[in-house]
Each structure stands twice: as structure tokens, then as C-alpha cells.
Image: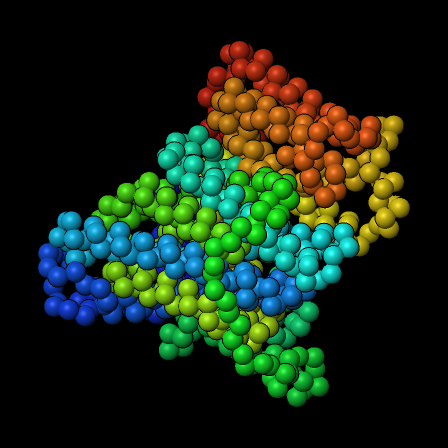
Amino acid sequence: MFAERGCSTTEGGTVSEPIGSVEGPGDTGGAGIGPATSPGSSGPIRWITTGDINGFFGLMVDNLTVMALMAGFLINIFKFPAEIIYTKMLPGTAFGVLFGDLVYTWMAWRMAKKTGNNNITAMPLGLDTPSSLGIVFTVLGPAFLAYKAAGMDDMAAANMTWYLGMATMVNIGIIKLVFSFAGKWLQRIVPQAGLLGSLSGIGLALIGLLPMLEIFKLPIVGLISLGLIFYTLVAGIRLPKGMPGVAIAVLVGTVLHYCMPALGLPGGHFGELEFQFHGGLPIPRLDFLKAYSDSLNYLPIAFPFAILTVIGGVNVTESARVGGDEFDTRQILLTEAVATLLAGICGGVAQSTPYIGQPAYKAMGARLGYTAMTGLFVGLGGILGYVSFFVKLIPAGVLAPILVFVALDIVVQAFLATKKEHAPAVALAHVPTLARLLAIKYNDFLFTPEAWAERLKPNAEGLSETQVVIALGNGFILTAMLWGAFLAELIDRRLLRSAGYLMVLGALTFPGIIHSALPEGKMYNPLALTPDQALVPKLFTLGYFALAGLFIALSFTPESKEAPDPNAGHGGHFG
């Protein structure tokens, strides 16, 4: 279901079959509505084929699952008010998918009409799983808790969090809009180790670990669902009669959840469910301005998420071109940027992106209809609210195994999609996310406010451990991307470029864009900090610039230009 994401693929456009699709022999689309014609031949444009039905179910289930996961984890982990999610967040989020899929359908129809080729398959668009779930765990959830800690009641904090989510989507949309004109340039200059390594850290520490806690809250249910996901998706073993693995895992886990009380064990009570749909209209609004200043503190998170999908969009367009569908890269990128921007203005809190699975949908016979049907179904799902029923019905411990699979897939793709010599850079990019996770646990469990303040003071030997953990975790996604980039360039013997990334790290550190000295991670004027706080940007910045200077000096030595030892593994001593 999630392996087709454009941001977790190789530059060559590695493709995997969409898990949500109906398994079959690979219909070529000859059974469509309208006169039958041979694949790739001229003739009437086919809007709906048998393959479009299969493609619709795959793409639709994918998008609904992401929305259900987002809502489920906000409600179950962060105790976020469901009303705000169903009536305000999801309608705008779904509207972005509606807009994007309809535009991609029109682009494919226009290409088919222009070329006379009725075998064109539309580019699939949907919610980006890694960033959608990442937004939950790095922006929406923490912001909701922070607003409550500042004295707001649940509903006031939820509304401010919604405004913040909208503003974050507007920022991501603007970033994508700007870089849609430079997608291929961006793909060339930013090492993939930094981009995918930063995403991999989120997969391991947040998308992987936190859902695992939900699984083991009710291990009988959670482990059965997890086992079925591993059996079908990780091990690749088919269930009897070709039953879809994800659907069966969710069905079995949900049934077990509601059967547990009859066995005298904790579980759900079916009679307590409310069979009601909660939706809303995705009306353009300027409420995001109410939290726009707060959203600037989350730019270090928003920027990498946006860049990942821009580069992913370049990848997916190339993979479609290899399959024979010559989409214009800039138009693909502009569409996803506008879709994200519109979603944010209309209340959405998750970005959309083109999926890498376009060749797989083409192979199953999908043409134009599957994206149009998906856009309409998902859009109406947000407006009419039927997705809310599925969120209430399915327990978090049953959806959590899907997230664990997503996390594993992200981590594996990060290593497989980069050069093997860059594996140390990918691994290094995990560290800031682990620091962020540790900082969250520090804040939640370990210290009283008095002890917390005391531990944020330096000692005679330098910064305190707590100061370092907080600083490393703040701006962790951007930090991880730049750490992976500087080490990848170093491994490739490009010392000046490596030094350039280190200087960028130093420049971003001084105002707190990354490595903020404040526990809440806000940016600041360094001159306004207390002496204890100011020591963090001062020492971190000097450290980065000192290392950059060392690499610049070493770049003039003949040894730095020697070819790597072929017997030394990853360009050094990793073998």
C-alpha cells in the first residue's frame, strides 16, 4: 500500500505493486467501457476499464487508510478532540486529493487526445504517508499538548493546532510551488543519503516505535494483526484464495478486539459505537493566519517534507516516462504544490504527492477513470464524513501494524535507494530523530519543572547532557538531512561541498532554526538569550565552522584526492 511513495524510491524509479490493489493476472484494459482497441493503438479514449476498477480500490484504500491512521493516532495517543478532526481537518485534506487527482486525470486525457494514444494511464495522486504521519507526531500532536500546557482548554488548543496545521500546509505548498521550477536541479545537488536518511530516522524512531507501544497495549490483538502484516507484506506470502493481506489483518484484528470482553479480557464494546458520519465543507478560510507566526517554528520540519515530495515527483515522472507516458515534470510538480496549498487554505493538514506506482497501475490495466473515481470518493469521504465511522470502528492497535510496516519500508528504502558507500551517512541521519524522541520522553516522564530547569544549565566541563539532547532534537529533520549530506559528500571526496553543508548547519544553528536552545524549539535572537542558553548556539555554531575550516584546509592535500580503497568497503573502514 505504501511502497509506491515517490519519496522513498531510487532515482531510477523503482516500482512496486500497490498493496491495496486487487490481485489479478494484470488486465491490459481491453474490457473497458467503449469500443475495445488494442493497447497503445489509436481510437476512442477509454475512461473506465476493468483495470480502472482495480486501480480505484487500491488508490482509494490507500488514501482512506492514511486519513484513518492520522485521525486514530491523534485521538488515541494525543487525546485530540475528534470533532475538530472529522469536521475541520479531514474535509480540507481530502479536498487536496480531489483537486490533484482530477487535474492528473485531465492531464492524461489531454495527452491521450493530443497523441491519439488511448493507452495513457493517469498519474496517481494521494496523501504522502511518511509526511502525513510525521506531521501527526512532530507538529500536530506536540503542538496540541503545548497549547494545553500553556493554559488552553482542549477545544481551544485543538482549534489552534488546526490553524497551525493549516499554516504548515500553506508553507509546504509555497515551498513546493517555488521548487517545482527547479525539481531536477534540486535532485542533483542534494545527496539522497541526507534526504532519505532524515525520513528513515522518522520511520525508525517515531512511525515505528510509537505505534509499537499501541500494539503491545493489547498484545493478543496487536500481535495477530502485526503477524498478518509481516506474513503478507514483509515475507511476501500469499493468503489462501488470494485474500488481501492488509484487509484481512484489519478485519481479524478488529473482530478479536470486540470479542475480547467475552473472554474476560480487555477489549472493545461494539454496542458503544455510534453509527454516525461526521463531515464538513472544505471552505477556503484565512484562519491559518491566526497561527502563522507559530508555524514558522516548524519550518525546519516543513521544509524537508516539501523537498522530499518535490524530488519524489521528479522520480515518479521519470518512471512514468519509462513506461511510455510522457508527462511534463513541471506540470506534475505544480499540480501537487497547488493541491497542497489549496488543502491548507481549506483546512487540510496533510500534503498530497504523486505516487511511484503509476507503471504498476498501468500494468493492471488502469487508464483515466481510476484517478477520477478516487478523487471523487476520497473528496466526498471528507465532506460527508464516512471516513470517521471507519476510524471509530477500527482500534488503534489494529492500525498500528500498518505503520510499523511503513516504518520498516522507509528505513529499508533509505539504505537500498542510496549508494552503498553512503550507508554511514544514512545511519548518521537517524541520530537527531533519536535525540528528539529522547527529549520528548525527558519532558513527559523524567523531570519535575524545577529539575528540568536545573538540567538546562551548563557545567564546568561544557554543556549539560540535557542541553545537548534538547538541542540535537530541535529541528531534527533538517539537521538529519544536512548531516547525511555533509557525510555523503565527504565520503565522495568532495570536501569543499561537505564544508559548505557544515557552514549551512552553523548558519542555521545560530538563530535556532536547528539546535534551538529552548525546550519548545523556537527560533530566537541569540542576543536575547540568557548566558546559559546562549552557550548552545555559540558552541554549536563554532563547532560546525571549525570543522568546515578543517575540511577546507584538508581539501588542498594530495591525499584528499586519492581514490577510495576498493577493499575498504564504504569509502573508508566500513565493510
